[in-house]
Length: 256
Image (tube, rainbow, N blue to C red; front, side):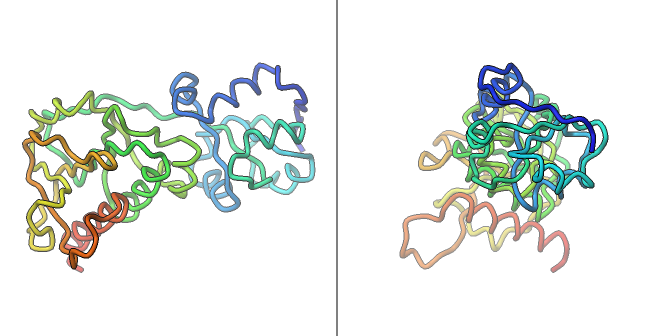
């Protein structure tokens, strides 16, 4: 096995950085993230091994159990149990990966969309992760994040997204006003909109998903789409609505 670094102090500089990766601010500041999961860790190592810089384990046997999956460049660490538990927010007790963030360029909204681009303002990281999972499943091209959106590499988003974040491209949108000059078809999910099941979905479009509870700005110039229901509940969960819309677009484009 490659050399292993043992860390047993919370004052260790590396450990202090990893602790800050448990929230969006720390992730943005350090350009890194933590990935956990019995299935997601091996899959991520197979999918994008160069994205990761280190592996953190609770003990030597846990590290040895996945050694065959680890690329040579990965720094191996064994943490004291209490330190590991602080980082293992999902309670997996399995090795964690430290990854490097991809670039998040500012979106060029003047250029027309290519494929489906999902514009997202969801502030709950678990909700965002669930939407990213659907976006990857149904072939969305990239995710455009509004300022109030959660970070897609937040631990809760990664857990809900099942490695979807590693399969998608991201860009930033400076605010709602920036959408006013966006080129190409621009649609949004809104309970008061037109029946999306009757839409002749274009191949290229931007689909806007507003904030939980607050929805969309009232003055946003966008074609609004609604999902028909029995009306027995006021609205659908944002993640469910997004999945339904994405599946409709996918099925029309694929001829299903």
